[in-house]
Length: 93
Image (tube, rainbow, N blue to C red; front, side, top):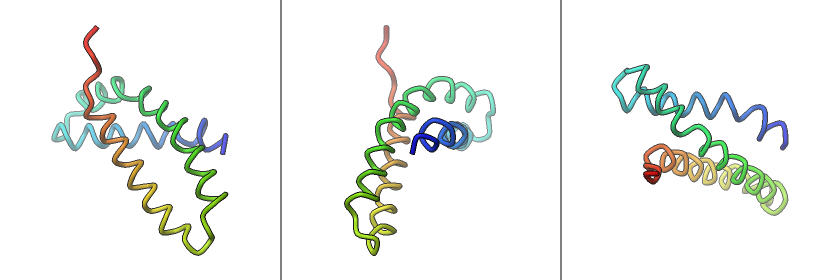
């Protein structure tokens, strides 16, 4: 779980945010890069909170026969959370 949260999630999160930015900007690499700079740390903080709790719940409490179904729901929830972080404007300082 530690390896997943602190090593493997970095490239996945970067690629996800970059892809969302690239699609949203209709192919502008500069805009996608700026979106990665803006949203990467909030997304990583959410990863460090969401995934450990999710994995403990999934493998500790969900019966094996239901893990695929519950895992799909949790992945959909993660995609929604990542999209919210991407589209949420930080407060002005």
